[in-house]
Length: 431
Image (tube, rainbow, N blue to C red; front, side, top):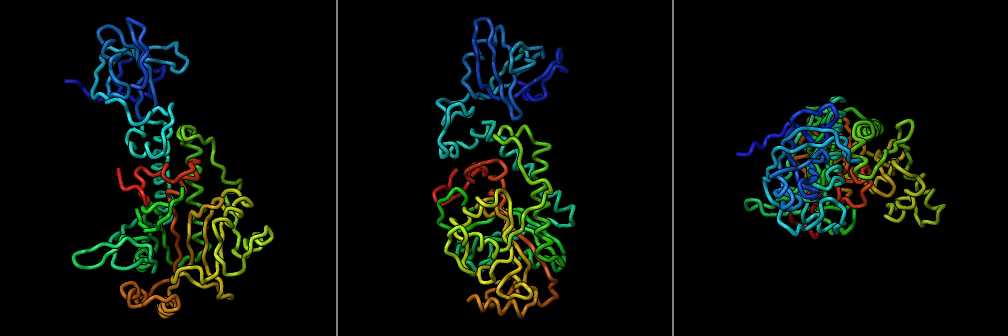
């Protein structure tokens, strides 16, 4: 019986272990047969190491298909190889599972594979150091987000993903039969997180959401991960400060603690500005800049993809667009005092890409009911939500951050599918 337990990972092997016994588990990446011995490169989740195989183990090593799972045991010794300061002189070489060839993709990345082929074989694609690095960064970023929000007094919550009506009154919902009733997949936790400020004050949720949009772009998915926050007794500029803190902390953590993963992803350092503040532009400022550049826009027009791309060329990196026209925003957004044509709202952009949308919410129940009617929505359809506003709803503000898009930006990826393990879009339902 083979002992499958390992004592070390490849990245841990160094000169301090010379003369020590180790057990390494991983996959065969390369084999160089020189007769009475073989040099075997074994890769695990942390990196690669070189194993020197001799005697009866040579034949097994040479005949083993690349990417087969193995475990080795032996003594660490100094190496003459330029890529490996130390190597393992193998005493035990056990093949645990043979890889069946031809493999659908080359997980080493030496032979480029089409994006769809990589997604079809995503589990194997994770042996590619670049792919693995992206998902290690994704995990690290979520920890930073949670730590930051908890440090600001937020409580993590879990809201339903099966709902009985539209979260925001939109039509882009996946509907299905639910025990002889109509149900939908949630496109946002918006209504729930507002209600929760009644008793929990500050809440956040990290979870999957769903939009039935027939979009075929590099930035849209039908299932996506969103980070949502809502806080009582904060105004919209307060939660803009919170966005800066969350995003800034993630970037700082990546730059300081995850340089190896960033390098594997092809990123040297993520810029974030010297003062860690993000430029705040009003909608009207953006409109003026775009009109000067030849865009035919007037107040109240939404900013098209082309307009946002042009704006992104003028404002590199992260920037806020705030104080949008009220008519462009959902029913729950608060108007701006002194100019009710504007709203207390904002989007965080990176170039043309929208990452965050947020703002101050209406907390007065009568104004909320009136706004629903103004937008052609039936208050009766939101009766469960509106009940909470009759119980002393505090002023509150919040935002939703598209985590997949943020990871696109931070890892330099050109397609959101590269930063999602098993993406769902209009064409992809498996694996």
